[in-house]
Length: 382
Image 1 (cartoon, one colour):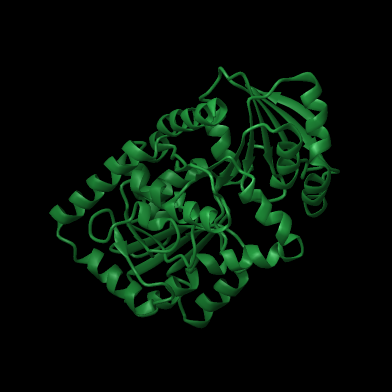
Image 2: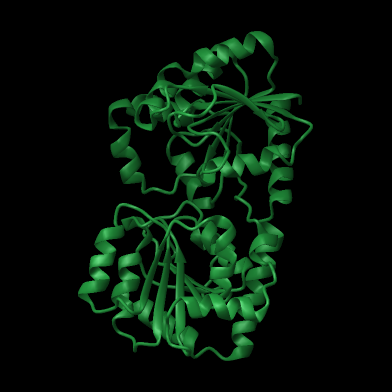
């Protein structure tokens, strides 16, 4: 295998999203394969073409996000056809069933090349169906023409089958985690200084989340649960989103302003120390494709609380690798936090050890890249 043609909404360079960063982590670990990426331009300053390592990026559009996705969906195949005149490809790879997948299907039908669809969707299926309601026939075709489906969770793999994927190369290969970054050692003084900067009581139990501030992540439920605890239970919220103002108003209304810190967008390099300075990671998601933030917390040796939504059950086992709460169930959130607070040290250490070992064994990028290359080869041989 010499060359793969990728279709994606965005490139894999910072500040790309999780799905794009995932294929970036995979491609850089397969330096013997050349990748051509056709994606939307999205940012005005972005070059139409640039090469980063073994990935040649070909951007389509004018630099306006709301327009460029549509341009990619309608015309992305023409950029690919120009590339097909220059290079011979082994495989077409679409990152998610979204804008970039539509031209990928057209190239598949024109060339007959094997077509691999990666599923990383984190939004609810209802939201996705509403978004594609005017192109539903073409959307369904993304699944039916795929020769292989790689999903980051069993939840998404099952969805792919329900949507019409009929092939035999359906496989769960999860995203990896930057384990060394989140397992990094910090001196106690650094951790204590960061913890004191929160402005919480010295004996505080610090809840922590790194989440988009959208309904799907259930942050409002944590804030409601917080109101049922004494003043030494506090909450650090890293992330931004459409609900940020609404959540801040909720905190004010419940009289929790001294106990909640909204950090806004946090650089990924700053997250490990923030996690080390906190006690419990919590995200009571309503839906989740996989949930890499949970895995990052496990690598950082935090006790994790989450729901059994979407792909979370792939790694979160109640009482074994963390604790499960009900969806939109404030009572169960309160109970889980109290359980963690009173957890014997031996049980806590066992959970932390079990979760960390699981992440290192199943969610490291080297294993992910190896499994992806094996899947590429199976599709090409077929």
